[in-house]
Image (cartoon, rainbow, N blue to C red; front, side):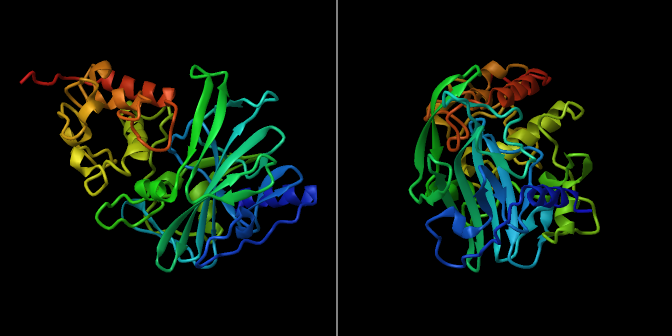
Length: 366
């Protein structure tokens, strides 16, 4: 049952809102976001275009405590599930991710209650500020990243190939104060979305079968998100159920599963055997084992980013581990991830600190 789509349609009908039909642009990127039709501003709300499906992830990437509204739409066809739960999307797919914050009357923004997860299918612009919308567009020659920045009136977003810096002030948080929200340029998008450095091929990172397979509740309805997307015609399910990627904040899961899922979502797009950070010898993908994950591993190419520490992970000593030093830093020469954030994700850092603190064993002095 397409319970979420039905709920959205009922809400839009009740409000008298007519939804725009999306358009696919096979070559040039239009100067405004509205030309795609995936999202529209109507009566002070950001809503979805006709046939556009929202989705969320079990463990999302942290981006300065922004909320994110994720959507997918396809001109035709559906995504098939490949190796390790990867999704092979057809030409004509448009994936969007809109970054926004709750905004106070004084113009300050507040952190998302649960970082980056928002199951709603619309945003109330009287209480929220839209920052940017990023697209991944599947054309004949592969995926293309496109970024649009919203205007102050919250009526339209314009194409920004060179990126942008949006000054914001975070309120009611231990990092409260001004910070620079950075909209990436096209090269920076490719830097993260090309997990295979040799090919340089851009790919979606978040939507995998394991990340999409999760229970969701909308109103009085509860169901399985991946099944909803399959019923909408966007995913073709295989015979085997998807291996679910652990939610990083799931208290019922093991500490190791949660920490590894967090690292995979936030770091493995670079730190994998084929990634841009392969020279580090650090592999933070879900399937990595042993020293490759960083346990008692001396740095290879971290330079000043070590903070004077000897090992990627020193069991029982998060304060002496390079991994947590870099995740907890905002120094451009040390921070990891090095793109996509200006703030420290305090809750994610606390998870990694606890994970390392509870590890058994010691690293050799020699």
